Every structure is written in structure tokens, then in C-alpha cells.
Image (cartoon, rainbow, N blue to C red; front, side):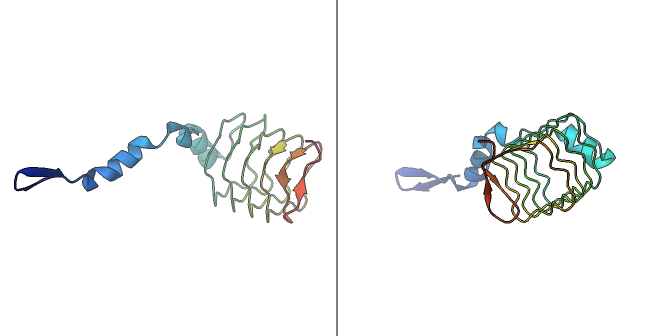
Length: 147
């Protein structure tokens, strides 16, 4: 909007700021595959899915089939219900699983480098062969067993 004051014109940029802010957001922030998220939501299955950077906070995917080394790098699964889920061989590097319900989940042979499990419930979860490095465990301690 242009305002005239005497001989000088002043341009008011305020109406343009919100649209400029959205234009400057990198596309990498929305890198997850929407169809994979929809498939997981609708069927409870998403084998070999790429859910990189997916935001699944509060998701209830009880007994989900996520086997076949799904990619959940940098995902946000805080407070999600993944009880009984098959995450065998999953790449959980940089993933936040704060306060997630992972009771009875199969996390065998998964990669947890820089993964945050603060407050997560791992009761009865299968933890065989997990690669821990810079991992925050449910009690807040660091696990660097494989760094």
C-alpha cells in the first residue's frame, strides 16, 4: 500500500510480510512424503516408507507395520502411540520420540544416533542390536555405546 505525504511516497510493506515469510521457508522443512503418512494413517502399514522429517506427534499407530527399514530420520513422534509397532531395522537417526508409547514395539537392529527417547515407555520392547550413539534414553541419560 502506498501512502502519499506531500512530495514523498511511502510504501507500507506490512501486508506483504506474511506472504514473504512463507516464500522464504525452505522446502526441506516439508520433506516427508504425504502419501506415506496417509498410508500409515489409513492402513497402519508403511513398510520401507520414507518418513524423513515427518511430524507424527500424538499419532496413534498401535501395532503399526513399519518394517523393512523405514526411514524416520529427523522425524517428530513425540507422545505418539507406537505400542506393538514393528520398527525392525528402522533408521531413527535424529528422531524425537519424547514421551512416546513404545511398549512391546520391535526396535531390533534400528539405528538411534542422536535419537531422543526422553520419557518414552519401552516396557517389553525388543531392543536387540540397536545402534546407540548420542542417544538420550527415557531416564534422560546419554547412551553412547556405539559411537
